[in-house]
Image (cartoon, rainbow, N blue to C red; front, side):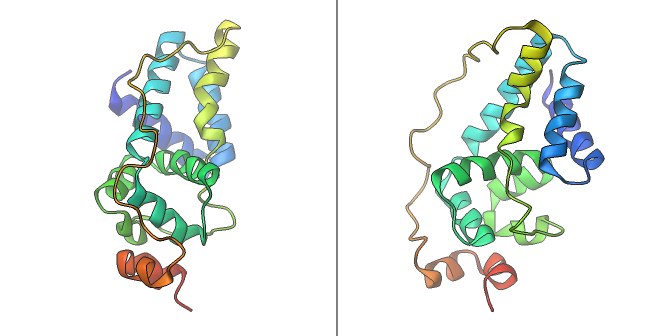
Length: 173
């Protein structure tokens, strides 16, 4: 599966799900089960490599501002959701996390930022197709800790300076 095919699957499922990550995950599983197991494995590789690329301190800070606090597990879920937003949003966020203020049409911290289901679509599709667990992907080990300089998430001043656009939209009262 080429990268463009990966993003097309992500985008068309998101659009059909009208942005609901749980529905998007279900649609992706359905679409992946229409492919061969090798294509599902390729999808998993694309997804996992993007999860690893997004394991960055600056993205964690953006998620912290958007969601008013983010645990380790919630940041994993946020990264899955971020991949699910498609190539433009994902790459834009990696380029400059504060640009999420411009890239996201609307963000509701009660319903957005949750993409745990998206992280498991390839596993579920592969198991449906083959009756077996998804094999090891053979990707390089992802970073053990988020990449980048630490950010004091508990200091609103630090967050407001680092993410001025996000702060103005989602935290400034």
